[in-house]
Length: 225
Image 1: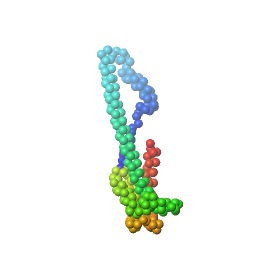
Image 2: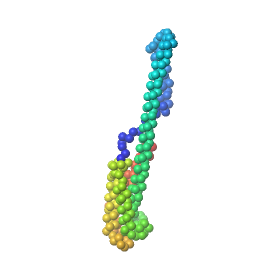
Image 3: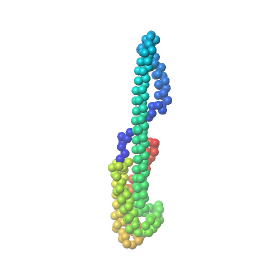
Image 4: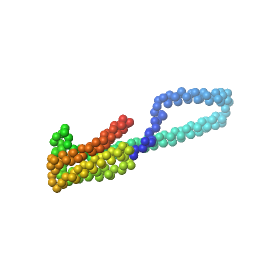
C-alpha cells in the first residue's frame, strides 16, 4: 500500500538564484560587522602569528560548514533516489493491476447483451469460445485466479484498490454462477446467452467501478508529475 508519509525530494537551495543573491548581500554585511566588532585598530595591530591563528580559526569554521553541507547534500540525494524508486515501483504495480482489472472487466462485459451492439454478444461467444460454456467458465476462472493472486495489503491504491478487487471478484463470481447454470456439454444457444446476460446484469456496476477508479488514480498521478 502506498504510504501517505512517503518522503518527497527536498529542493536544492543552490538551484534558487534568490538564495545566491541573499548570500551576496549578506557576505559584505557580515564582514563589516566583524570588523566593527573586533575593531579596525585591533586588526591593524595584529602580529603575523595572531593573523595566522585567525586564518586557521576561520578555515576550521569553513571546513565544518563544508562538511555539514556535504553530508546534508548526500542525505538529500539519497532521499530523492528513494522517492524516485518508490514512485517507479508504484507505477509498475499500478500498470500490472490495470492490465488484470481491465482484462477481467472486459471478459465480464463481453457476457452482457449490449442494445447498442446487437450482434456483439453472439460474436463474442462464437469468436472467443466457439460457443462453449466450458471455455467461458475457464476464462472467468482464470480471471478470478489472477485477482486472488494480488497481495491486497500491497495495493498501490490503498483501500480503494482493495474495494476494487473485491467488487470485480464479486462480479466475476456472479458470471461464473450464471455460466454454471448452462449445460457445458452443448454449444450455448441464443436463449442461453440471454439468460447469462440477464443473470449478470445487476453485477455490472461492480465490474465497471474498478476500471473508473484506476483511470482516476492514473490521472491524479500524472498531474503530480
